[in-house]
Image 1 (spheres, one colour):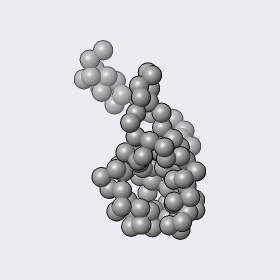
Image 2 (cartoon, rainbow, N blue to C red):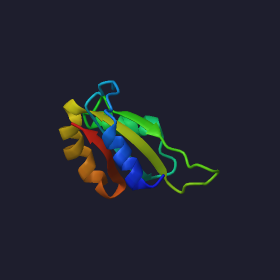
Image 3 (cartoon, rainbow, N blue to C red):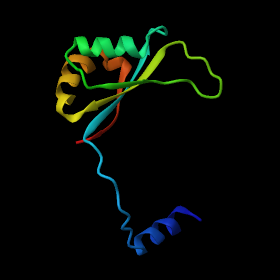
Length: 103
């Protein structure tokens, strides 16, 4: 099915699927940290900056690849997004990418 047919198909159907409301948050990819960096160390650093409610998850390479640096996905709740952006993102800007932000 080519994209124009699919697009027309979607326009003709009334899509009313229920969705679960999502918590307002920012998701940031933090990469190129030292390979030995752990989730606990990153969490401790963020707490030291006054950012207690951030959840961090270590990202692994897929398909058996080996990474030369550590990479994390950090979820920042909306009430502390501004603090995260001023305290942390400015330090990590070359190493940090905003993945999504639903405000």
